Amino acid sequence: MMAGSYSSDEIMTVSAARMLRDGAVCFVGIGLPSTAANLARLLHAPDAVLIYESGPIGAKPSVLPLSIGDGNLAETADTVVSTPEIFRYWLQGGRVDVGFLGAAQLDRYANINTTVIGDYCRPKVRLPGAGGAPEISTAAKEVLIIVKQSRRSFVNQLDFITSAGFLTGGDARERAGIGGRGPVAVITDLCILRPDPESRELTVTAIHPGTSREQIRLNTGWDVRFSPDCSETVPPEAGELEALRDLHARTAAAHGVVGRDA
Amino acid sequence: MAQWVSLSEAVAAHVHDGDFVALEGFTHLIPFAAGHEIIRQGRRNLSLVRMTPDLIYDQLIGAGCAARLTFSWGGNPGVGSLHRFRDAVENDWPVPLSIEERSHSDLANAYVAGAANLPFAVLRAYTGSSYEQVSPHIRSVTCPFTGERLAATPSVKPDVTVIHAQKADRKGNVLLWGILGVQKEAVLAAKRSIVTVEERVESLDAPPNACILPGWVVDAVCVVPGGAAPSYAHGYYERDNAFYRQWDAVSRSREQFSAWLKQSVLETANFAEYQRVQEIWREKGALR
Image (tube, rainbow over all chains, first blue to last red; front, top):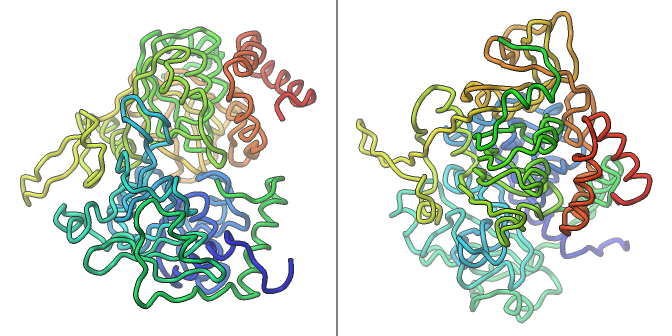
């Protein structure tokens, strides 16, 4: 690949990684969030503490885990605790700064559905379910969401709210008694969205280079708004791309597959 | 008191039709061999519980062993859907499967409550989610001291819990390490328990605070080397990631799954034979 050229997946992962500050305690979902969090750790955030729900605290995997409980996570962690302890003491205990989540579907208020499409009792599509996302989205001090943008994932109306974002917008989250700041950014392969300070509706605040507003509209299930000071995403730097590609190459070599995110 | 028995004896003695059964292991140490033996012995109408019903529950569900499933995340980790689970929920094949869905934190807390002989778990969860509307099991309590509203969910107390561990000594004291999941809680919450292990040793040689289940809280211990494959056993073998990917194709159609089940599980006598059959499937390329 030519220097300076990168894929939409790469700018998504790099942009998400940049949002994790050094020293942050991050509860990491598997797949895209895990890729971004580990990239951050390899770049600007060597002291970020990665917690996986299977029990590793301070995991420093050399390759990306395929499952949430890979042995490499345990071997490289500062400590490994039981699953009840992870959720009770560390997440519910209020020790997590950032919850890093993926999503099957989300709406304009960053509520997430990973449960069903269609009626709950007679679903059209049965998705995996909650996992730890409902408690991560409410117990972490803030939440980052990384997801590929399309009309399938960015929907006008969710059939089911698995994990609370801003519910019906405005101060609905606070009124419901949910702690934490909630989702502070949604990073996609097209752009970065942040909640409007008043309405809490996800608003495009940065567009990846080469992406048009029309493209973003076509891939969003609601009439998406653009922030008045909407900017262009800073393209990935050579060092960022190199670190990401090395990570994928190491992962592929270790797992015997082309690195992909589930 | 733990009895050293064969896996087929353990399942025959402790897993009955209609039982509430937990097979635990969070990605690591998943008791595949024991799950296969439950299928082989034709158990029916089981109520299964497991935080992450992955391939082993896909197999139990596809084989028609389960009538009910309590779970918190049902997928093929790193790959995608569980096709047999989805076929049962969406199309009632091979038999209808009713589900009780919880979150990870909820189920983990529910096992802890079960182990602690409490009727329910208390946690901060579900606020703003739709689960409260669809599940009769997710309710709330008000803290008598602060007035805070907290989620309350029923504890999990299986009739029998099955886990896999690294080793056990002559007396059936069990040692496990690495990613521990909820195995200890699941065993202590259950009326009966079966533990399969990689090896039987004279002495566990474990440091204080190691995760040990004393033999007197375990009913049956069985030596089944490789019994957690295709998941992994820390210190013994790695996760067979290729199998997880291949399962997507094997499980996608009822016909292909039924052929795999018949050849691999129903027509094999034990886990060692099952593993030989998997090698043949692999060589034929049928699992690729």
